[in-house]
Length: 398
Image (cartoon, rainbow, N blue to C red; front, side, top):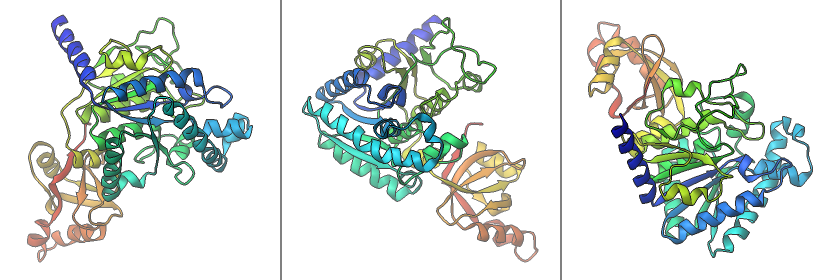
């Protein structure tokens, strides 16, 4: 047992020391103070560390929260004024320029240029835009520029609305997931999520559903698999941030599927980035699982699911345990509306999703095939019609 743990620990240290392309996310509680101003005493040391990493030849991508908080502080609004979506969008519009101005000033001290990259959900759900985003980011990194990424809250409401409505099926509803999707698109080696806690704490949840804030809670230093039990320990969102430990676990799960390593650590710990990439045992590290190739990762995590195909038990077995494509013969019914090349959910007879794939036909065409295969005249051709190609099917963990 101890030998296996030592092997995993050595793998963690090796991967972090060798990581060349890094995605680093700073949370709201790291970037801003309680009154909505930039917390320079926390951010400036982190900028210095990122600059030092870049000077050694590593490529750094920064995903930064804090625009809404900075905008609120600049406008002199109390936190209670952020109760409506439009006010949050206005604060984001004001705060984003303040955030970029601060990063430009701080990185300039180290002769490093930055670029602003504001994203919306369509940049991930549409494969062409997803590919274009990667090409642009690759070029910025070739120029030695550090991209500073955030959601374009002024025009996109996915993240802001999710903060009010809770979890929803959008490509990203928080900057933790956004950072993980950026890591996936760039095939980065490491994802670091800096927050206001030391890592993932092994504490039971309180009656309110949040992780108990106990001084005896211990940081779990290494995680090789994200289990339902682990997710049950995750905390809810903080007062000023939009995410929480659950969103960080979800982000780490995406990173692990990319074949990369993820780390959750405190953004307030001195020299935290240098310590992480020196292989020091700090925070919570998530070791990579089996690598999923790019298009399949996009289907599983980034694409916007448009509808659902419900299949019979035979088709489910063939998809889950074989290498079959989905044919009309195994389709029971169609739910929702989709067009050819849209990503659809694939569910078993009881309605539980077990896979996703890119549809070869529209929902109306698929429904017509279901109708035809039940007739004597259409039983042969309709039943053999291809709905989703095997290469475009991704099985999900259930």
